[in-house]
Image (cartoon, rainbow, N blue to C red):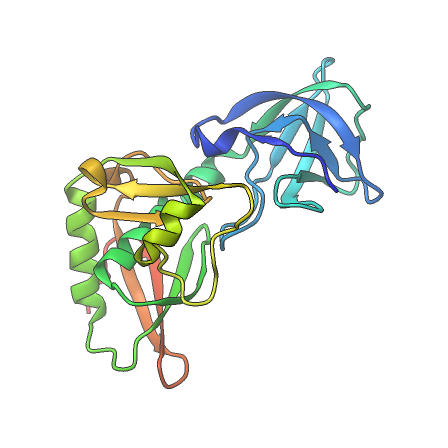
Amino acid sequence: MGDATEALFREDAYLSTAEGIVAAINERGGIVLNRTNFYATSGGQPGDTGFFERADGARITIAGTITGQTKEEIVHLPAPDAARPEIGETLVLHIDWARRYKLMRMHTACHLLSVVCPYPITGAAVGEDESRVDFDLPDAGVSKEGVTADMMALVAANHPIFTQWISEAELAANPGLVKSKNVRPPAGSGRIRLVCIGDEAAVDSQPCGGTHVSETQEVGDIHIGKIEKKGRENRRFRIRFGALPAM
């Protein structure tokens, strides 16, 4: 079994810098800390990059972050030429904030899209410049202009975004919270993290372990760049930053 890492990003997505102690280094050189603000790749959101700062000011470049033997173990992947820290060493952890903030805005935009298009989700991937969400949607019947306008209305309304925890039993009693058609929230820990939008979650509430902005206005200008047909009942929506380009 892997070691559990305290995932600071779950409670505070804006923690760009934190302190952690090296708990282990795996056979591939991956660094495991007692706590981290680095998000590990999961749920369609890429893991964080950045650097660790040592006591003497030297930097260890982190090229990626993944989960280890369990979802609770977070492994930081140093760049090939980076130095290796010592077990028990205290490090200051700096995420690449500009990149993370883009991913937070994009991940939030994906949630807004799922509000505007309330269909079962068959796949999703969050990117720095473009994200995609696939829906089980036989007949598109929607336009990128209409979906963009509806998403931007949610952005402009500046709804609050917050997280809350419910028990697995509560989730089982409310199966409609799960929007993904083929991916279930991780079970076994006894509790599920919900990302909620709007006062008292009036706009949306769904299980998610990713990082998001704290109010919809922070998403900024976004638009649907393309709606693609991927199979008989699958439609792929591509979200991009910026206003919808004029035709």
